[in-house]
Amino acid sequence: MSKKENMIEELEELQKRAEAELVSLNSEANLQRWKTAYLGHSSALMQVFKRLPEAPLEMRPEVGQHANQVKAALETHFESRSMEIRQAALQQNLQQEKQDVTLPGRVPPCGRLHITTVVLREIYRIFAEMGFQVYRSPEVESDVNNFELLNIPAHHPARDLWDTFFIKTEGVVLRTHTSPGQIRAMREFAPEPIRVVLPGMCYRYEQTDASHEFQFNQVELLAVGKRITFANLKGTLEEFAQRMYGEGVRTRIRPSYFPFVEPGGEMDVECFVCGGKGCPVCKRRGWLEILGCGMVHPVVLRNGGYDPEVYSGFAAGMGPERITMLRYRIDDIRNFWANDVRFLEQF
Ligand SMILES: [Zn+2]
Image 1 (cartoon, rainbow, N blue to C red):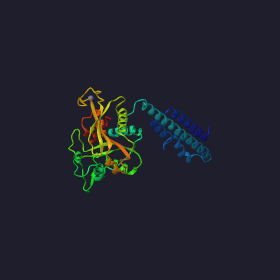
Image 2: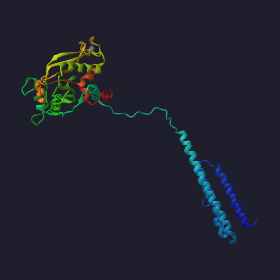
Image 3: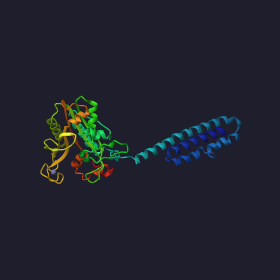
Image 4: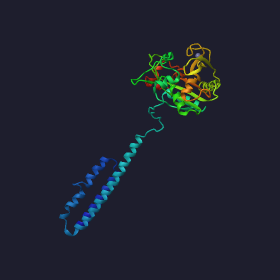
């Protein structure tokens, strides 16, 4: 056997051995050792390249070419084996860290509407079904709209009913009730008939306690048109009570005084906690006062732009916080704006 054939045989042996070994490897570390052993600087294969210049001239091309082929084959096999091992490791990882997707996840905390907003929207919905639209008016009002045009002139003793926040600009107040919205709505729509719900925040200069807060919401109702009678007022409010407090709930209207209505009244509903028998919520009376109401005073109608000889109207007002307090037996109105999440999260 010639020296050339010897060297070629040597290369073939080398390739066979290297490939057989490569197949049995199964870790990244072993793979690197293999690479050093068969393709590294001091590997047998590299020795062949180093020895090549010493070989007889006529055998160099063939041996060199063969050595190059072996080197290329080993490199290719190394790459593909390397890929296989990495894939296998990844698969194994995935198996071990497999997540149980059927486990219930952690529910992220989610915001919600303020309970007063929820009750307000319930009220809007009920009155919307009876043809009333929401009409918004400013929380900062003129003294004229808040009092005078509502039949409460300056120095009238009825002004004592509303402890008022005055601001530095003279003649401007934080509205004490939503009633100035009546004037605004009437002046906007007169002489057309009106059916509106007037909601929003009101402010009173109050000493706060469990049942008094210096800011609170009101919802007011106003209907103006021809031939509107007290029977319409009673029918509308009774229908509201049935939808808000449950079908069959009894109601009653007692006479009361508000300067902007004549006659004026207050409506009670049968206590929905005890059904009228008497309990701590209704203070043993069996009835809960829920709203004030009355026929729009002729002076107010005229101030709104309607001729009281031709037009009439009714109005009613209620406090959504009070309704909420009764419904959920909340004993302190200050909870509503204290911004304590423990309170707000309950609804
Ligand atoms: Zn009761």
